[in-house]
Image 1: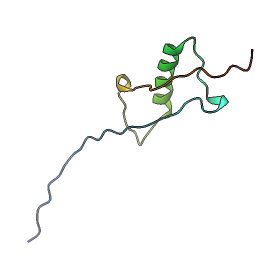
Image 2 (image 1 turned 45 degrees about the horizontal axis):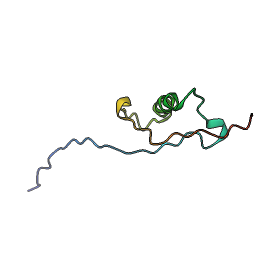
Image 3 (image 1 turned 30 degrees about the horizontal axis):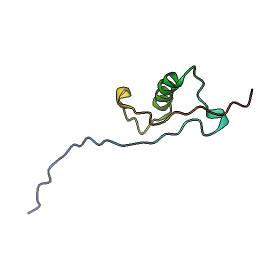
Image 4 (image 1 turned 180 degrees about the vertical axis):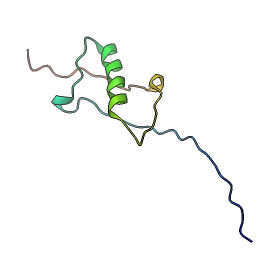
Length: 73
């Protein structure tokens, strides 16, 4: 006699590290660090599409923001 398999659903959280600004064409231009953090969140939401996954924008943490060297001075 074949055993009856149960059906399960799961919700899985995935931590994703996404670097922005590692290349000159990638920089975020902002007035201050707070604006840069918000723009980084928006950029990540636009760029990351994992098999139709949905992300909670309010739960995105920006771990670090640093000012790039400005060679135009």
